[in-house]
Length: 211
Image (cartoon, rainbow, N blue to C red; front, side, top):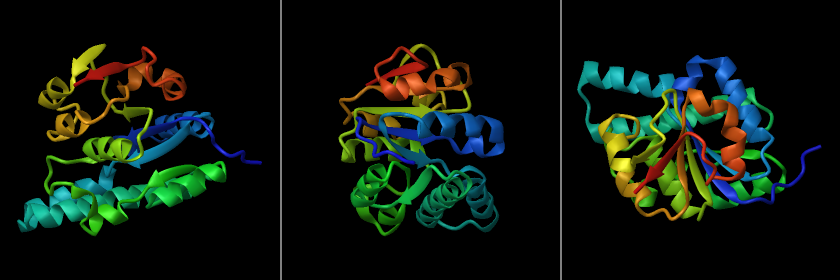
């Protein structure tokens, strides 16, 4: 039986690269599915976004169109996650998120609103699921933002430094600057403690991201 989720809201971005590592993906979803927090997952685009990049490189269509297709790629990964894991359900609106939590489920955010031009998200490859997760954390007044990545970062780092090193997207520092909640980057070295940081986003796990 699923119990309603009543804890703090924590937005968790799952890097699309985890689509290529099912055992690690299972580990991540298990930690989120058993969390007491009201987790909201933002999926990366994974192989679906890679296909958009490849097609754009071959055909030369605009970044505006590629941006919309990349958002669609994130929604495709959301559908895959919801299909693979019974604890997850797709959500496109705040109401969907609340309904999922009331049913004891973990919502995976679909990009429907953003694909229709809502949210004020700039169009281009400089905005990826990192920035969209920060945008959603702001929209939901989240208590924490956790970026699950395929690479570890330093113990403490500014958002701009992480962007310069390619660990987050170029636009992330701007979106993250609006947040007052803790932001953590969790790579493979800290993945075993993902449940700890979701339960308490200020926990000393992974990289503490500063403004």
